[in-house]
Image (cartoon, rainbow, N blue to C red; front, side, top):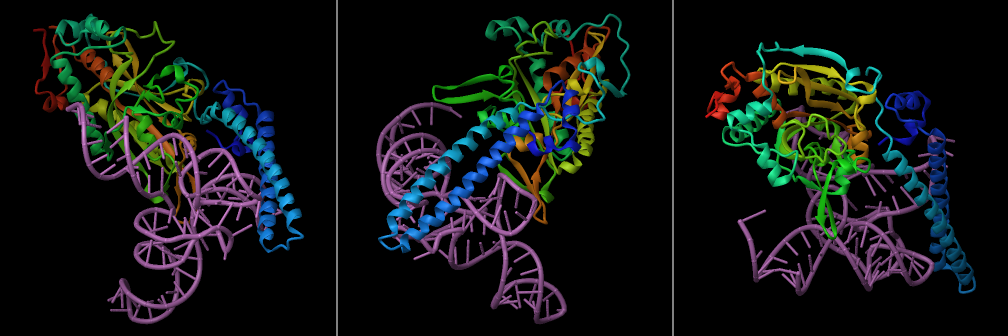
Length: 421
RNA sequence: GGAAGCGUGGCAGAGCGGCCGAAUGCACUCGCCUUGAAAGCGAGAGACCCGAAAGGGUCCGGGGGUUCAAAUCCCUCCGCUUCCGCCA
């Protein structure tokens, strides 16, 4: 969420910047709502101040003056109520408008609206030479570690069952990711995966993207399944004031993630790439917003370190302004090489949200000198287990049909190859 | 699920319907004192909203009500604690 005054400030250049995300800012409506709300607040405050003065004077008033004062106080109550009603209504309208305005993309982002418009930043590793590579589904089924048919029986399409060494590999990856995160200074959390509406609103999933979420609860209680640990981790400090000198905070958690994937049918549907439920290690940073751009470089480096540790070939791209998510002001995608698809595919997104999420979630900061503000928030996967497994299988496949496990992972798995048995 | 109790500033903890944004203690900041520190003494300091500022307003768990006036009275919701039941 934006500060409406900042949006109206010409130096922010909000109209042009939002247009790059395909959002047409209605400056006139915003200006009118803000001015109307503020003047209603003023009117209410003034009437209330007068009302307090009158009420206080009642006690010392003579019996003759009393009835007139009481009547005056009654009248003022009506004025206050009317002004409050008006400011409340206008404020609700203003909030609705503000909650739907996306974050401003940084000027350094390339123009465009699709992943084809992304700017290549760097590539890492060599594409392995594999004759007639299989994709991870064929590999996984041949190796007996992946059972999509039975997953569909249990839950429907877009779920997966891992078996034997596949399940163990999943556990090993999670532990490896968490250990690396710890080495990079992240504090591990275990958090709820069912959260309330306020929490989902804080990070920007609600109100706009309800159809992407799984909703549950009981008759009188509304809960949502988290799409990523970003949601509980970032909201840990919602409605809190953090001392600026205590930042940055670096948090991580391994959680299941739930996504309805509404509207994405027909895209990357095969295997483990796009599931309703998957697990992921997430990295979150809360920073001094003046440093968020630098923090993004650090963060993307932490995600890359995971891939480098596994020896997986990947590239980093800077998303185009119009392809950058609602809440982000800048996003790097990390795309891992998938021989089975002969393409780089997204495995992680590292995003800088500036103060956009912190304003929604009420994550405030206070400097030593008393200056108040909002925190900068950032996050990335570090990494999703399923998509990493996809890359591991496809890049690690050997001519004899086996898959070699990266050395760094062997202490966690206890085996260094997957073979059909 | 049943019963009882409790929700006040960073923490602890007072608070008669008007003199209460709120005593007091601890913690905190800045002085004085000290070689330095502690102790002591003095001063300061909550958050949020409107406002260029002066200033004004709101906030005693949330919401509603009574009253000219509510931290204080009433209703309701939420949370916490303890006991019982159930459960991993």
